[in-house]
Length: 129
Image (spheres, one colour):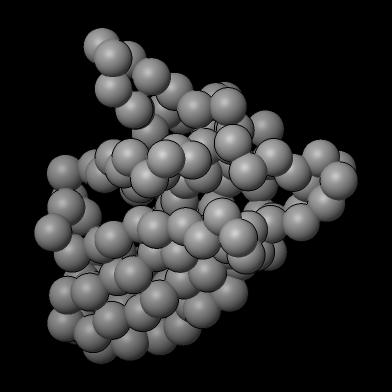
């Protein structure tokens, strides 16, 4: 079993910052897992935002590059997402996920929902204009 528990969501004004955390636990958790943040806005499909593998290699979608930073503390089994310069279009439920990792063309890829076997319950991020 693997449990993922997100925290840190909230409501901020445009231009503000938030830091999300995801604590992993359970006998089935493996520090070698690739970890990722996904988000889902109302009426939209869930999309991968950023991923990080055990060695710290990261990958981001274009819309968050330079604004979001994904990191992990393997000693604490915790994943983070530092979000800055938040915009209303960042409003969504944010989920952390764990999986074996997706590699394409020799590099880390975020992948899709199907590439991750473990999910948290989500934390809401709301950005007002």
